[in-house]
Length: 229
Image 1: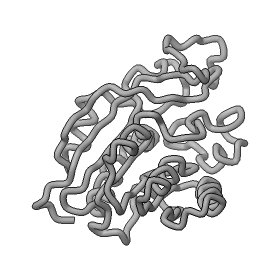
Image 2: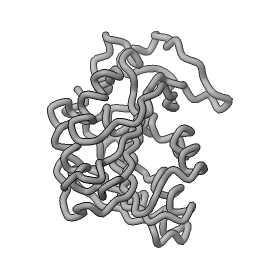
Image 3: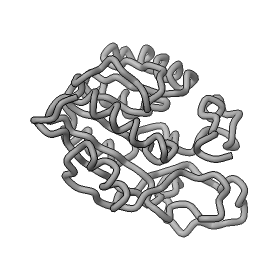
Image 4: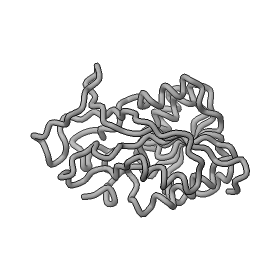
């Protein structure tokens, strides 16, 4: 199995590739993204690209933003919708769709957040995804991507994310957006052992809750004021 053939709905049903819940579900937004929310970095309306269970969308909605979360997995979307209803968050909407080909939101979003989606995309679908995001972003919109850095996973792992180095990330996103910065940033995951490599110990620290801190990058970019959809 590869990222290109991953059964994402199976992962969210907890009967797929992983033994239990998907490790990227940490029950809250990634700390790097949570810090951005607290700092007031986002402007409504916000697109949460590849929202999963919606932790980022829900946190943005609780902060007062209008958010639309787009996600391929219907199981994840149902979970996010249910949680939003339980919390009384009417300003968070979740839609099942192919994130590399979505339409209907031309120049709507003043902020876009991609929290660990980019490395899950097949490499040959990155450009289509970036085109779709660019089309949906308003002029001057901010775009944040949190992505695994090259070397986060061992080369011998049979199925692993499509990690990037800073140059590769800049080249891909820079075709459509103006890059403001790319800096190292940790990605937390609930990982005991890696699928297929049960005896391998990863050389990364764990936080106080035992979550492994993988190396990643945080990118901030923006859509030019003169850009067209």
